[in-house]
Length: 58
Image (cartoon, rainbow, N blue to C red):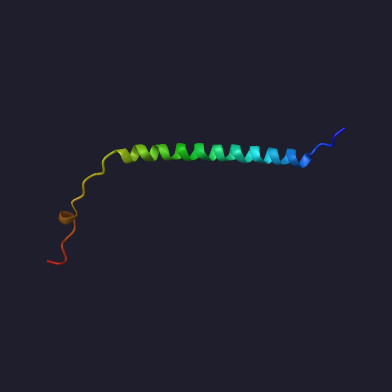
């Protein structure tokens, strides 16, 4: 009877955990960036820098 290869089994479990962790991290990043993109879709308010700040060169 063949001897079980525990090292291989452990490595496979570690790879599976790493894969799940990466997938979770990707979902987290996608979820976190979704509100940011919706906020950036609104046009920025126009700022009139010449009227709001005094011109020190004149």
